[in-house]
Image (cartoon, rainbow, N blue to C red; front, side, top):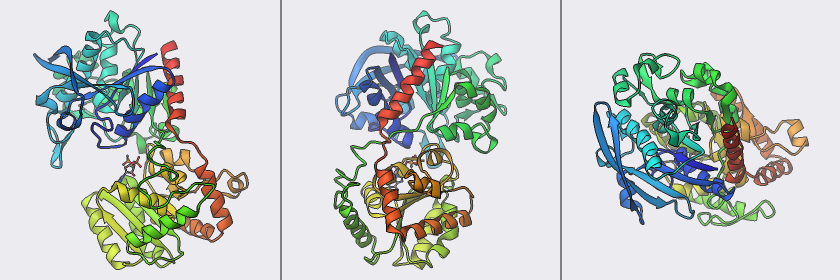
Length: 485
Ligand code: ADP
């Protein structure tokens, strides 16, 4: 098969979220399964500035946008360390900007036009290069108009007769919602602007269009695929998602073990493995010293992530006072909403010597926390997949997570049966409250007191395989099913 991935961001070219990691890794994993893949994304300013070996492709893009015609160019390079070709849609008026989607003041006003152009440009580029695909795999709202176009404007185009589409939604909260007059820019018939297709409370919704028209829809974990069919997680699209339930799937993201593996990680002070855990104690001591915490044998709790409501920061804040009365230490790394920066600075001051808070993005420290901590907290409200709990499993850092989305799918609670069958890997709680989190932490801290049990949890998690290979196999199975339909 040939699979063309379309994404608004791809590592290492441009990244604002986990989506970029997925599309940076998945195509190569699919390629090792003997399927042809390539990727498309916009040519942002940062891509131009940082990508060596960019070469212009002899394709001129002429795209109708509303009553006018917009022109663009096509460039190519290769995803580093792979042989996956990356194509870049160039239109400097749209993409040559410092940010991808907006400034701190808000989204760019022309985002609908930018990504209508992108969607059409990808299809036109495929035609111009005679790049016939079995599957166009679209990621998030910025690519979600492609499934719409394939079933409407391009439905009778002989070139696309064998081409099916898959849409992956990485986070249901981002949908690409625009005022209704932007329908004119799409070139689509107004008859599609109805509540079962593109219309969403009087506005135009790109993601909804993709969900309705794609041949299959996926989210990045099976649990999240089930959750988004409910009002609590569907962000208004639960109705159309429920209608698509027979073709809605969840596939867990893989992680990159060449980067996140304590046996080879160059960013940690001592290497270790499930067979030889001695290095982990050194990593813990290093983390305590670096975080200005006393070096002693107490459980160290780690937390890394965007400081946002989604990540359950309010739950952590709500139980920190109680947690800090216990003989524990905690290291938090994150950046995000201003209110949480302020709050964390306050508690860090209050519990100096027990709690260390670093505000900012720091990949080095992220690795040191994963290696040096004993437990890792992820009390998310919702979590489409989550990566940090998977890193934690590999680093023998026991995850304490809320039972939602990818967290529920990847961490097995240390209930007696699971301990007995040696399948337990962490602590999972349901209740969305500081008390719920505190109860789970109390259980985890008690388990830490029994080092035999604790080592078993560590070793079970460290032995698991959450690599891209198994995710890629699941995607290929899905592609085959879609093609055969
Ligand atoms: P998200 O919802 O933000 O995508 P994930 O857990 O799926 O959450 O992935 C977040 C990724 O970003 C992880 O690789 C994590 O280590 C990294 N990360 C998040 N915040 C920080 C930070 N402040 N410093 C370093 N790395 C971070």
